[in-house]
Length: 426
Image (cartoon, rainbow, N blue to C red; front, side):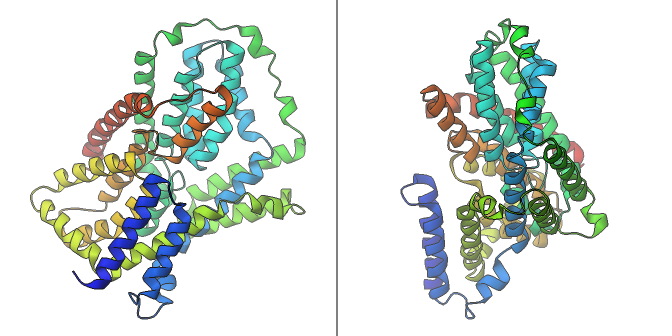
């Protein structure tokens, strides 16, 4: 192993250490690491790192969706949807759970999971207080559902954005495979919750409390509220038909973002831009450069050669191993750097081994996204959801308690996914 390979590995390890331990801000570590690999001479032409290895389709897709979601969130349309679900299904506690689980999953398929949890946890805690029911089963259900829902579309979870961009998968190419799987995994989640929390779900609820909830208070400007729903609908339609319209996902995202700013926030754009997760975008940019260094120095080629060795025996077995390994690692590490490292490996495996088709991308996506439910640190939505329980209820959910539920959810979802892919790609 030469000195440049060692530098790229050490930098990547440093970034992983910062992600795992949180002792160093991950963006600070990643940006510093990116600067180090560029300065070390890994890229003969330093601009090559920016020109050839940063996936700007992913960056602008994330940027556009962050802006768009911030605009819509100010109009309370997501909160409105949650309360309407409560009014429709609140007479039956199990139906309330099912509706909220599916609404959280659906919203997580089009906006990021953290935003979804930030919207729904306060609503759900208020609902539980109003109905005098235990909040833990519902909050855990929503956290798990947000991660499962994120698997359904390319914009549902950052790893999907990265995978779809690398594999040249359109919104519909991805969703027609992963959408039905997300539904099946949500059903598995619901069955698990109904069995494990069967005592908590037997509580009778007061129908009058639900009747008194007023959605009209959420609508500050009726015209803007309606426009927000229209913009959301148009955006989803554009994503669905992007292949036929010859539009990149990033272009759709930018159209949605700046159309919403023009129509609804023409005088307050600086306030919306301040709420964009610039730190996350910088982390992505730096990560692309660092994984580019691993590719440039041949480290990823060495890794893929080792991986290909196993594919000679059974492509089906390798697919299952890839998904399971992705889930386990993503349960303890941020799935973004893991996915970034595995994309070039997966590309090389598909290129070299004729027995493995493009379906391998879906195994990688399922493992990377579903594994986030395994532990309290497996996904950002988990960390935020548990932090909000501490904030609003002054209760701390331990790592082991979360894992006692999350571990079994991941096992159930992996079994469902293996069966589903086995049938779908037969």
